[in-house]
Length: 311
Ligand code: ASP
Image (tube, rainbow, N blue to C red; front, side, top):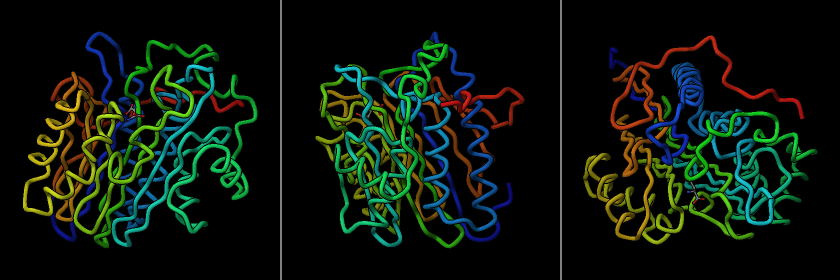
């Protein structure tokens, strides 16, 4: 790929909880479709913030990841989302935690950033605020969730299936967005790193990061911001990512993270058997991967990856 013009880059993840013997073809096909859509949008000058939020929202809607329609029920059988985003150019951020009854956690987090004076809203207050901003409600949770609708639950890994996107646009702006349906069987009210700016999500003028994995460990080491600090100190993004995942492991956690820098460099790292992921940049064609380090060219597939949106 020719690398003329200003740098741009995009990386996506769909969770690092993969298992060797499962089939992730539909999730990988969805990631391929989304990374190619994102490439087209970045090439035509769309803002990194819009691209990351829209791609995360599409992953939520797909039902193929543990976010949005594919979310995990907690110990009471409820579904609570955590989500956050950060606009690196302006240092703005927004987040929701343990939000219920709203279709898109990431759009709720964006509403907090853009339409309130706050950074983080939780629980009922977050739900009320999101609905007051015109976001779509979940009207029938049982029908909306993919699992009871005959979806093959074996396609969804319930341990780490958070979704995230990081991007650098043609104007040099970075953004990061992360959304999760939580970890299976969590205690009600549990909040993970995906809602915590600096732990699961970070963007500044130099770098954007989105994490997935055992949220408690990512919070303990303030993972996303720790990667940013290392990159600010001159470390290459893949070196910084590996160092922070080693800290996550020391904090008894596993998972992965994606990084895009203002130079248009991309890192996608994990300390699990794999991570559902995709990336593209001004220097490298779009590619996807799931198990291990192998990546393959991203291709659009004829097969429909989404669940029917029939709530
Ligand atoms: N990090 C998420 C959490 O702890 C889970 C995940 O990435 O799958 O809520």
